[in-house]
Amino acid sequence: MIPVYEGKKIVAIYTDGACSGNQNETNTGGWGAILEYGQAVKELHGGEPDTTNNRMELTAVLEAFRALKKNGLDIAVFSDSAYLANCFREKWYVNWRRNGWKNTKKQPVENRDLWEEILAFTEANRVAFYRVKGHLNVNGASFDCAKEYGRFAEWNGDAFSEADFLYATERNNRADELANIGIDEIRGDSAEEPDGADVPA
Image (cartoon, rainbow, N blue to C red; front, side, top):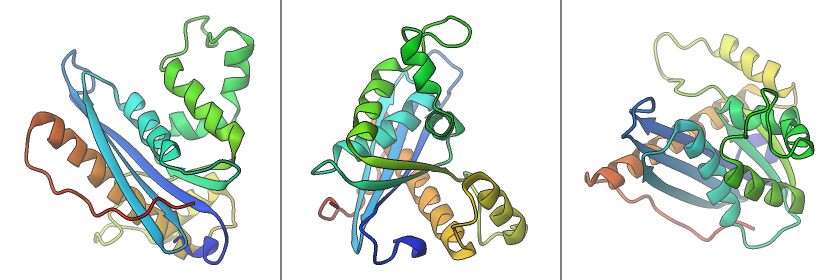
């Protein structure tokens, strides 16, 4: 559990989506999610052919929500998708709904089916979205912890410690690994099945 939430009844969710050949007509996407509640941890993954990276990012958080056993929960979602995090932090969906699911360019909002189901979960629970930077190698020689923690705090506020930042980053990296397992399975490549546990909450 992320240190700031230890001892609190909060479900922490870490998600990531990936798409190999994202700009091509034929591609393969994958998603990964980790749910934590106290000491209980559950890892999920999957994939789809002919999709997009954004759709996989949304699918990851949606599948995590679907795994919850009840509503009325306090949930913290950590994602490296600005598309996902900013929608909820800046309430894009309010105007989308008001405008008949049209964006500022008067075009239909992409992935409306996923957004609507995600919104239903956010309205049935108390959900906060936080942004992390993807693909950070915290053990790499060029990793600047102070700089990256500063960016994390700028995005998410100063309630999180450096230890929280490092933990969330490591969990995001694991979610990325799970997303790539999903891609491998769709392609038919061999993939390691992650360990499961009781679904939190």
